[in-house]
Length: 117
Image (cartoon, rainbow, N blue to C red; front, top):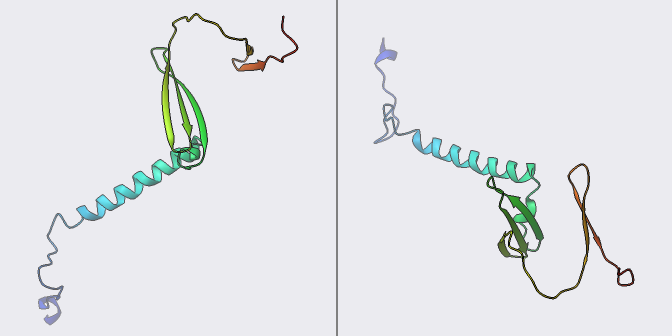
């Protein structure tokens, strides 16, 4: 019977009935989960270049409403450009021809200097 009456000495101020004692551990687990999820997403979409300070990257993105945006990363500088459907006028030179293939991919063929029509 003496074993049933013995109390364990757990230090001063600690209680077994504190409902908030596990909240700090849940917060830490949540942070580790979020960081792991972000790293997995970067790896799945091959976006590691966004994290490298000396890389160059160009991303084109089409929104649900049909508007397009071009995101350009050169080193540490990131710029976003909205593509408009406005027509422009002015002088310039022809740089090449773009073709859309049957599978939907686009191919740009630069024009050579001697092959003007």
